[in-house]
Amino acid sequence: MLPKHTIQVATAGEALIDLIAGADGRFEPCLGGAVYNLTRALARQSIGALYLNPLSKDRFGRQLAAAMLQDGVHLAVPEPVTQVTSLAVVAVDANGHPDYAFYREGVADRATSARALTQACSQVAGLKLVCTGALALSADDADIYLPWLAAQRQAGRTVVIDANLRPSVMPNLDLYRRHVLAALQFADVIKASDEDLTCLDLPGDTTLAQAQHLLQGSRASVLALTLGSNGAMLLTRHGQRFEARETEPITVVDTVGAGDCFLAGLVVAMLQHHLSADWGTAPVPTEVARDLLCSAIASASLCVMARGCVPPTRSEVMDRLETVAMAFAG
Image (cartoon, rainbow, N blue to C red; front, side):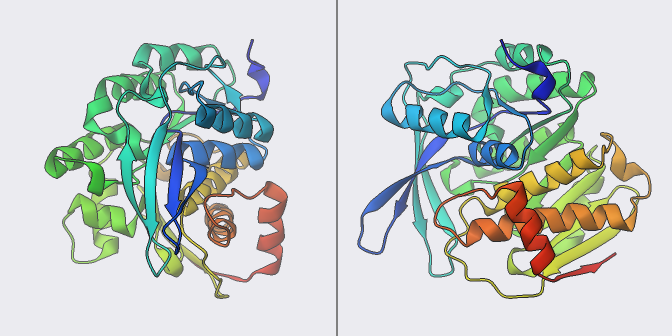
């Protein structure tokens, strides 16, 4: 029986093992997957999180489950399944940016259905918000995630989708782009990176113009845009634009999971401010936008200073916000 009163967020998407290539050619297995990272990051920041997908009974699946449970994540499917765990081979370039190759056929986190995801959410009376994105936006899994997303919007829950594109592993890039844009139509809040916008091949001569096009072409009320070392931006349907970045340089070990931790920090602040699903359609107070962006950026910064994705706790995020200066405009 799920402790229904403690769960605020449900997440759906991949949980896998990142095999990260080292300088010596060896691969280090790290727990990962964008949605998995996000789920752990939420729980480590004291948010009641429910992970909806199954996990494998193999060794990697047991490790994935153990880390989630240790962080306080609730599993909608507590019994492991026979399918194997997904794998991602990750090569990190000189700038710390990862390149991925995925092994995703017949795997545990895809052994689910729209009905199973929807039923699990319906059993949690206090559920406020759902999150998905990344590999869940593959056209191959449209019959799993799109009906579930539609059901969550109909139920009045805030839908947050992270575009988080993976073009290198999608055989039909045009189909992939079209499907990602179709999935984003279910979002109340979209999170994307400048690289995502480039991959989507959106109209516009600048990143800002592309972001505005994406927001206006969707039903979302807010778009959170990450800009790497240049910080992040928040665009609202009402027409506001907010920007923030840390003013001190940091030592980047790698950027694996940075976007996931950014989104976790954003969602935490959204919940703390009790924002409605359509909060970006009306004027957003400057102090609220500042809290959202600063929480998200601090979460991401703490992540990139460690190898792999090691999500920070809420106290670590708050400490960083108190000790690292943030430039903000809006």
